[in-house]
Image (cartoon, rainbow, N blue to C red; front, side, top):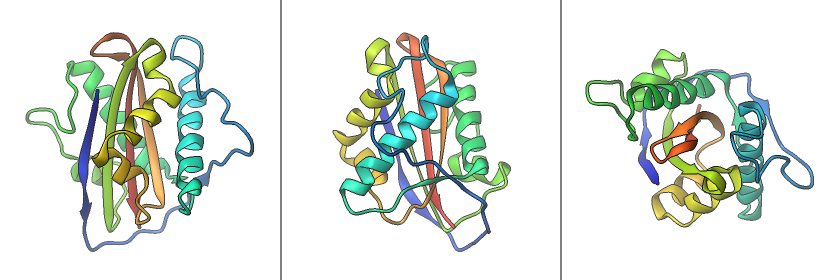
Length: 171
């Protein structure tokens, strides 16, 4: 299952100290499931895959921003805790508010969601599904974004699996 938030823009800027996560060669953990790999390894694998796909389209790599990562992680936990799959829980904060609460303020942002059970929840399957969905593909391959954060929970609406959030932004 997939969901995408249309890219948003604003007029603010903030200095970030991103950690660039690129891998040479293969992306370790790309086919791993939540039952066999740590969330850190799975998030790194998805970032690696996203950046390889972006490079194949002539785009720069996304750098992890800890504030965007915090917002994405909080949203993944909120969806798992409150048993929903959407960009906003009824009465809950929207993406702009979540990013603001995490301390990130930029000039553009977007979000993609996915979940899958078993092999459909791996980083590789998640990116493949995003690339087959025009709104998700647009966010993954947008040159306007330079920062990202990934949220991951080991529960999904389909049962035991992965619940993914990728938030992206530009300073």
